[in-house]
Image (tube, rainbow, N blue to C red):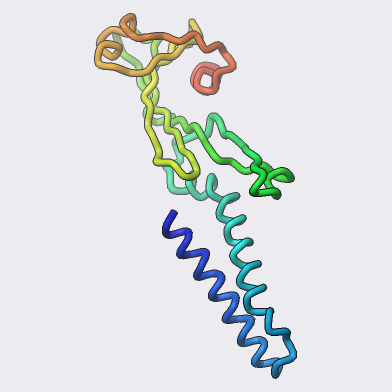
Length: 168
């Protein structure tokens, strides 16, 4: 967040500098408010670009084996442009390469689910998935040893994790 603030100021200073050079080259024909106006517009454009490309830039740093299974788009009153095009603020990502099965319980899948939020630290949530019952459970030591010990949640076939793992 701090680096984005620095980048926003740098964009503003750069735009103001360009406006000042253009004002000098035009021999003072540009109005005096051109530099702060250019800085403000450039900073706003950078912030909007940064917010809208966050999800794609984040996914670009991940391996090819990951897949977005759920994305939350939001609109905020202090960002009126998000009412026109909502912004992705959170994502749930599945690492397909890491999906495993237990030989003792082959119907149960173990998958790593990653949760990304725009201004939050990423979290990994290993999940046990039972496709036959459309249920999933958080992983614990007891659940890994014996999946019957897990606290299963019947989430249904529309759950993004169940849909991604069981209907593919």
